[in-house]
Amino acid sequence: MKNYQITEWCHHFWREQIRPGDLCIDATMGNGKDTQVLCELTGKGGKVLAFDIQECALQATRERLRQAGVPENYELYCRSHVHMDEYAKEGSVSCIVFNLGYLPGGDHSKATRAESSIEAIEQGLRLLKKGGLMSLCIYSGGDSGYEEKDGVLAYLRTLDSQRYLVICSEYYNRPNHPPIPVLIVRL
Image (cartoon, rainbow, N blue to C red; front, side, top):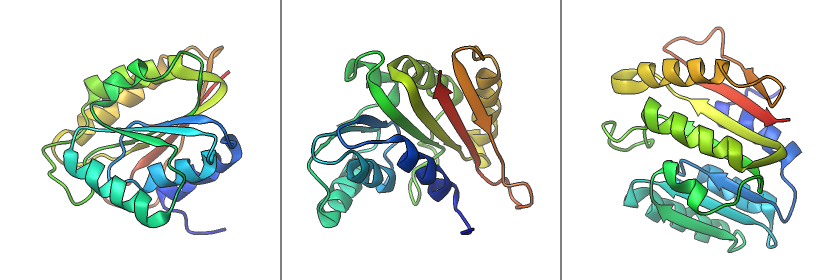
């Protein structure tokens, strides 16, 4: 088995879930690595909506996608993930991905927060089609990371087990607050 980083671990499950032609959302596009994978998996007939509050994230993602030569099946928005329900219909999305924390290499003061992340997760759960997948990479530590981690995990415990399967994993033997991968399947 490969020594998976958290994003590679999530990508494994995306590959099982996403089919050409699907609609997917990258709720926190960052530098565009996940957006690129989603674009490749959905193909020319699919669509990827990607959100970030920082213009530098859009620029980095746009350049990454151009260099990768992915299909032009994406729309990039300089908006918070709490607005994704304005761009997709309820029950229409195959996969939604979140990387909670701050932009790698970016300003740590511009990080996701528990309140807005939970609001976006709630929206995303409504947008997912039956059998749809949501993945969360929860990075903690530093400024607001612990508060967000605790808030999001507490919220996920309250999800109706008849409607959602929540799988929370952890890197059990890694030091320094390793990220927590979470998968949610809409039943």
